[in-house]
Image 1: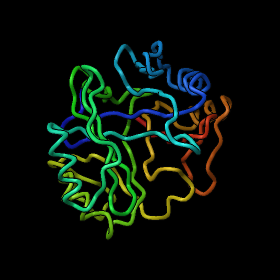
Image 2: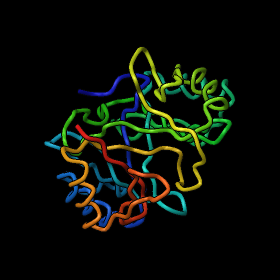
Image 3: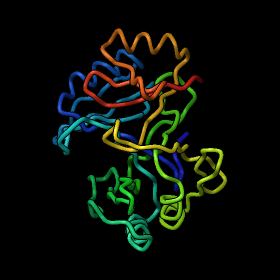
Length: 228
């Protein structure tokens, strides 16, 4: 299954030590990681389907998973974010024939990457070990919900879900984001959470005591596990 407009469609990890990152996720999830392109970007595959990517870090500080939201018209999407009070961090730019990317930031600091697909339709969505299970957004709902609604048509619900076109596109949790360099937390499907968590620790991950269920990979990026 491929993503739909208004939903999370792709994730990638900007990291200085790409070799360590790819080795960790390969061994944990069974991903196959393609050779780098001219920019150092490497696509990770699960059963031949793209699930994520790794690229050179563009920001100083700890690495983090970037979350992309699919749009059918990236120019209109950026304009809607600006009209809702957001700022443009990176204007729309083509990534070859793969698609067009842009980055906006909400008035309260939430970074959101937009993706208008070309040849690259996004991540492989399946209830399989190693596939993307979803994303969680740490935020203050009273402050951020109006922007998300106006910019993306996202409805923030009291049950901790974020909905677009009657489909859950993310979950949200209240609280500070000081423990992470981004308010986004990616979650991956696994067949056995305790066993996979133990395997992650064996491979060099560390638990976040203040956030039960969250792990830090050997390069410093946060992620979580969800049972299929």
